[in-house]
Image 1: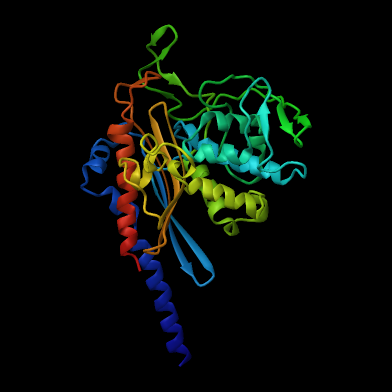
Image 2: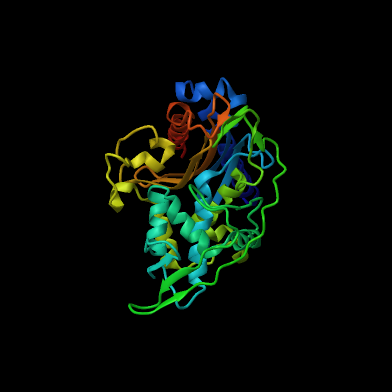
Length: 375
């Protein structure tokens, strides 16, 4: 009797393991004959694709995450663009959680600026439309030294945040924030003084045939060595920490309260029309590249995409937790692709709409279709 039970138990474990191995949705997705996939896979060398997909299995109270990779390589550089806003937003919430006198609804403005905001509003804008100014305000709150130190303490590596985004100053000193302590009293934050970023020494840190500057075309590769660095492995692990914090040791988590976690999850899953943006300009897929980036259709209410995208310098990236409550489907997916066929950077001639976003959209749909087949 005991032997029979053990045999049944062993068979169940083997079946579960084999099911996960056989159901490699990423491999099947990349083998798709859909033209949005094939145009990239048939000329793979020039697109610098990296993908990490996490299959999720729930067994009673346990969550099992199984990672599948395609060309993930921490030493091969890609420009992370606005995906760096994800850790910045989380660390801003962590800073407020540790400060008794401030909360996410405290009004403030950057010294020398006229825009009043709150951290809650900034985070909403960061995820709804990837607003650079909202990110930069939180950057002034934190400073790059503190950002990098906090990520290192959580064992999130490799990573290096070195600059603000969009049209910005390269000043190493953060600007003071004028904070409304109440309706009639303001206080001012103390600026931080940050160190010069060390040049990165990675493969592909110089890219292309040339780049545009104020004087015209410079016929030499574009140097990304002092730019932000957030590889797929680190970005994906940040997403895991906010979606499944219980999978990490306490010192590896973002230390935020339930209210802050609910705020950022709501912001990550929202679409622009739900927070007041014109849906004719900012359609649902505007910052949801997986599955919906190449369409203007509305995302069904039963499908939630908790994500952060980035697109700049020809690189398109998305990092998402996708959950379909109607069909009981959920998975994590991070992917990046370079689309710069002429090899010239900083000229705004990139194939975002033609190749990059359609590839990510179809990749998401293909993996979703495979997930639907899983038991």
